[in-house]
Amino acid sequence: MKTNIRSYLYFSKTQRNGFVIVICLSLLSFFLSNILSDYLSNPGTDFSKFKEEVIAFEVETKRLAENDFERNASEKVPKKIKPFFFDPNKVTKEALIKLGIKPTVANTFIKYRNTGAKFYKKEDIKKVYGITERDFTRLAPYIKFNQKKYKLPTVEQPKVFDKLLTKSITPFPFNPNDASKETLLNLGLSEKVAQTVINFRSKGGQFWKKQDFKKIYGLTVKDYLALAPYIEIPPIQSQIVENTNTPNDIPKSFSKSTTIKVDINNSSVEEWKQLSGIGAVTAKRIVNFRDKLGGFISVDQIKTTYNVADSVIDKVATQLILSPIANKILINTISADDLKSHPYIKTKQAHSIVNYRINHGNYQRLEDLYKVKALKPAFIERIQPYLSFDIDRKSK
Figure (cartoon, rainbow, N blue to C red):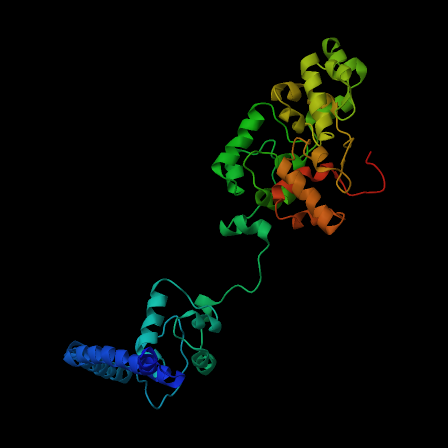
């Protein structure tokens, strides 16, 4: 009995596979029916708003196209263009349009000129926005300037005379030791500089040579170079008297002080102390400052010594002897640390000089220093007397 029941419940492999397939199809059919019913019951997406936007876009596109057509029509230039000569500094908007320039570009051209801009050469019209290379090539042969008004100077004037030329001043010979303030003003100096010269002289200051004049505070290098050829300094009267008098002619009360001579670049502290009005402290200050500089290039330079009155130096000026600078800077071998110890050279300037030498080689002449962009011409001129470009031997 059990065997008969098992025979009814037994399935072969093929039957079992078929049974699994039927179950899978039934489940798939169930789910698909639910999905399709939901889909078919959905009324669908509303595209009405999108259609309205598309219609609005088409209308706006058509309107812009019509505006572009009208604008292009207004931009049209004459079909038959007959070029003619014109001055870009005077030409009208209507003339530019007749020359084949679009109205908007012609309007830009006039606005550019109204800002104060000038056209000095043909290529300048290319600065106007909208002028194409084709426009320039076509119009260049017809550009003609009013030469009297717009011609640029072809010869560059010497820079050192720029100030004098702009003021229409004709230099003339003068002695800075006795020139009046009015004379200095007529030479092109400013009110402030002229008064500085007068103040310098009133304190006992003296110009011994032309180069002394450029040490006036406020006097520019241009002014000095322009006036230097006209500076005439006659022999100092006190020196003439000193050279012509015999020892018997000199008053006894002054014989000792006036016969002493001091070499400003080689004398010791003790020798400076022999001069009237110069004590131990002043003498030591002068010698210390001189040694830091390497030497004085003029008697007046001694006055720049800290806390030394000008009147003290003026009093003994005729007893001072100027000699060559004792110790010059070996510019091609000195280190930046040693270079910046000079009173006239700052740390940044010292490093700029040395770095340029390292990167470009030794300095051959003074002009090479002007290639160092960090150095100003006034600075180079100031240190020039202290420089030596000799790398084989030490300066004297």
